Amino acid sequence: MKKYILSLIISLFIVSIPSITFANEMIEDYLDIATSYAVSGNYASAMDYLDKILSLEPSNKEIVSLKNTLKNMQNGTMPSPMVAENKTLAQAQNAKLAGNRMAEMQYLTQAANNGGYWANMFAGDFYRKTKQYSKAITYYQNALNSTTQYSTPLLYLGICYFEMKNYNEAFPVLTQLIAYNQQESYAYAMRARVLTELGRYNDAETDIVTALALENSIEYRYLEGLILFKRGNYKKAQTTLEKVANEIQTSDVYKFLGFSYYATGDLNNALINLDKAILLSNDDKELQAKYNEIKAKVVNQVQR
Image (cartoon, rainbow, N blue to C red; front, side, top):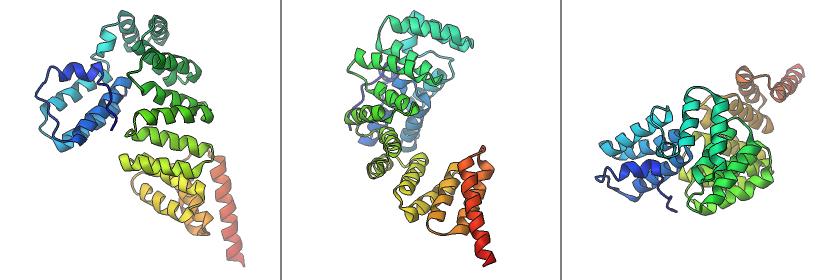
């Protein structure tokens, strides 16, 4: 796979624990992916990949230590090295811990205005998490323009464009990301979501199959079922979504499982699943309307 540039977060600890060895290429890849997530500040996903390493090497004390460090960064008890080196970012971190969002925004904006990759990334993250996607895009673009080392801003640009429903902008950005990181499953999954919204279901299915080959995620399997439904492959959608429903029970899973049954003429199973979806939904008018439509058909069949 394309190697990620080791972030300061992880490399600072790796150089201090030289006993880390890579038993195989998979472990090295997992550490690369964990690094990529840590670069973006997504410590939870970084720790998921460190857990994958520990499943292969349970006694790897260095990885355990690294995971504990990332936990401390995640809960704010230890600032990341990038923050510690930048006084304004440190002030933003302190404001965040104090719950002062206005001050946090002001310090982040000030730091970003002074330039630099990390300052712009943190500012972009702030605005993305507060759903101010247009502002976030500006900072992620600045971060991307400030270095050729990291491709992470492309992912967040794609996410922002997607959330803004600007799918035509999201697609080329995510395609560029995949060209950099061909082993990043989430990039394929995000592009699959974009392609689905664009109505390009065949291409969307290709991307989600690739994402699943890289990581067998329940989220990806649900997306595969949704794409199969959109493509009109209702039987396969049923099989996929039934397996997903055995692991997670959400309104959307039951909704599209019910729709798939309806499309194949199985009204009883359609009603059973849509009934579950309604119980878990938050006033989904489309769902209720479809349920009423199917129930009326069942009643008509009984009355004949």
